[in-house]
Image (tube, rainbow, N blue to C red; front, side, top):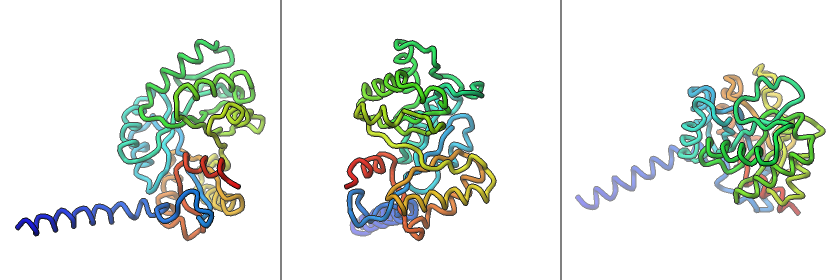
Length: 263
């Protein structure tokens, strides 16, 4: 009976691993610094926190897709906890002032007239509102990411919280955020493709194809999407078979490491 019990435990573990293998096969065979590894993509889903069902659908995506959570949203804290429990990277989706449409910034925003002291306080409150955050990327920010002073403050605050990385969502081509991150020694990268500025399914598919082609060309690429039904459907379909496109899905942190260590 003891042998039978042991066999049952082992079988259950095997079946559980098999069930998860479908999701995690995307990056298990190739080490991140292996020179023979496939080109890498990382995907961030922004704007998590307003809708519980949309957030849970994003968290259920196969593989290491990062969840970027808006602070002080109705479901942001609980979804961040759930994402972390499911092995997903959690990021703070930091609201920064844009050139227009700032009514969509939401709570926790940093503005051009935010003082240095206020900047630190807002960052502390925002990080506390998003448990398990290991990185930061900007929500909007087409105005503020152009300002070296504010971006220097941001990097100082990120460095103060040891281990955080930064991704410039690059909502303007005039952004200096990545340059300031690199000067400050903050592990950082920038977005290469927005998957769903146009949520039409045909356009989302075209943008996903563009993401993979950039990774094949450059060795690595970052895509940002949102919990739109069209984006979720595309990723649910494509991610389990991503290696057929000649690329692998990795965590954002690992993609940043890949770029930092690229020969």
